[in-house]
Each structure stands twice: as structure tokens, then as C-alpha cells.
Image (tube, rainbow, N blue to C red; front, side):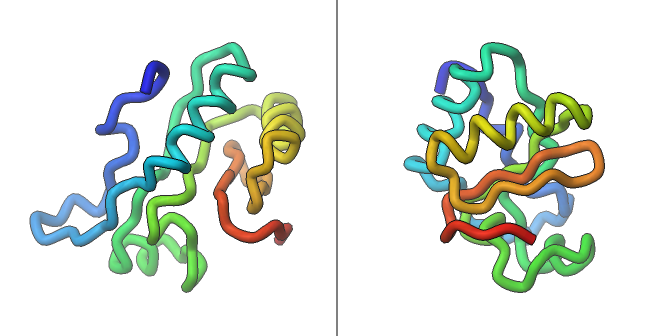
Length: 112
């Protein structure tokens, strides 16, 4: 992956016994495409999550983070709108703007 390092996607639980699933390779290829089209650095604030960490932070019970198919990208409100539109154009299923980030995943198309 030319734009990201593996450590950016690690679960943030900090537990030695973390059982987060590794990131999905097809998802990462699509994310690299998004970054290439965006043309600027992207900071990943959340990648893979174990069930414990996902529960702690109030993530969705069936979050795509749990299966290595989602990330949250740090973004200002203006950046978030542009990243959102680009991600939808590239075929990401779940795309949503949060407070200071954009969530993208390759699950089924939906908005929340």
C-alpha cells in the first residue's frame, strides 16, 4: 500500500489479548484508490476493532470495523463533504460524516 502503514489500522484497545480481525485486503486496495483520488494525506483515526473496543466506544453491534472493512478518516467539515462524495463515487457502501471524521466501509449501501 503506497499511502498507508499497517500500524495505522491497528485496534486501539491496547490489550495484549486483542483479537481484532486484520484489515481486509480488498478494502485496503479500495481505500488506497480513495486516497489516490483525494490527492492529499489521510489520517486514519479508527481501523480494525475488537469487540471489546467497539463496545467501549459505542460502535455499532455489527460494525464493519469488526471485520476489517471500515475506517474513520480525520476531516474538517468541508473536507468531509468532499471525501464523502468521492467515496460514494468509488463505490464504498457505508459512508457517513461524523464529528471531525468520515466513516467509509465496503458493507451494503446505507446512511445513518
